[in-house]
Amino acid sequence: MKNGQEPFENETLMHIRNRLDYIYSISKKYNNDNPELMDTVASLASIAKMFANIKMEELKGSIETQGPQGYIVSNLGNAFSRMQEYEKQKDQDFPKWKL
Image 1 (spheres, rainbow, N blue to C red):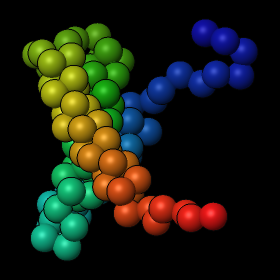
Image 2 (cartoon, rainbow, N blue to C red):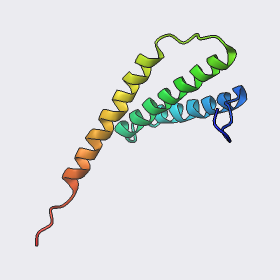
Image 3 (cartoon, one colour):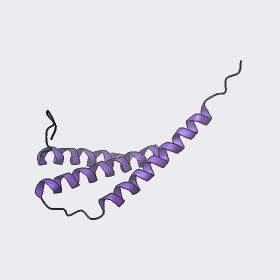
Image 4 (cartoon, rainbow, N blue to C red):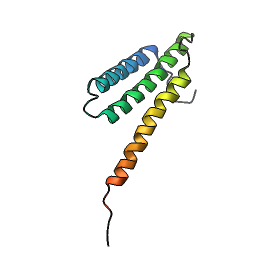
C-alpha cells in the first residue's frame, strides 16, 4: 500500500453502498423526467455498487458475487453509449458559424 493511502473499511463501504442505493432509487423514481440521463445515472450507480460489494466481500475474505466483470461491462456499455449519443446530439445542436 502506498504512503498516505488508507484501506477501505467495511463501515465506509456500507455507507458508500447506501448512498449508491439512494442515487439508483432516485434515478428510477424520476426516470420519466429525463430517461436517457436517469438510465445513465442508474447504470453508473449499479457499477459503483458492484465495486463496493466486491470490496466488502474481499474484506470479509469470501467472494460471493458471481460474474461481476460481465455485469460491470454490460452496465458500463449502456452508460457509455448513452453519453456518446448525447455528445452527438450536442454537436448537431451547436449552430454553424458563418464569417
